[in-house]
Length: 101
Image (cartoon, rainbow, N blue to C red; front, side):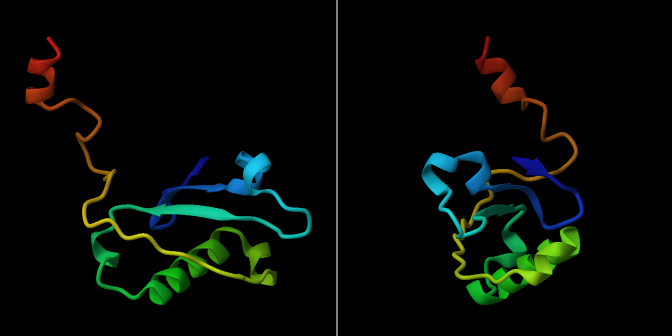
């Protein structure tokens, strides 16, 4: 898994590399999984608009990807992000500190 601060997806992976037993198929290229966080700005956008937005950012990060074709994409939207980058999110809340003991 890789991380970047230069795109709306803070973490991403090429599943063909990270899990080749499940996702690598000779001659079929890469399978990228990207997580956009926070997801709030994207919830109301169409899946196609989100896919195009992400593809543009992938091309900016990896210029050689401009020569490749996207054969399919899938968008999963969660109304509440599982992860949000913000100051102080790495520390435990007072409730969590008190319940741990």
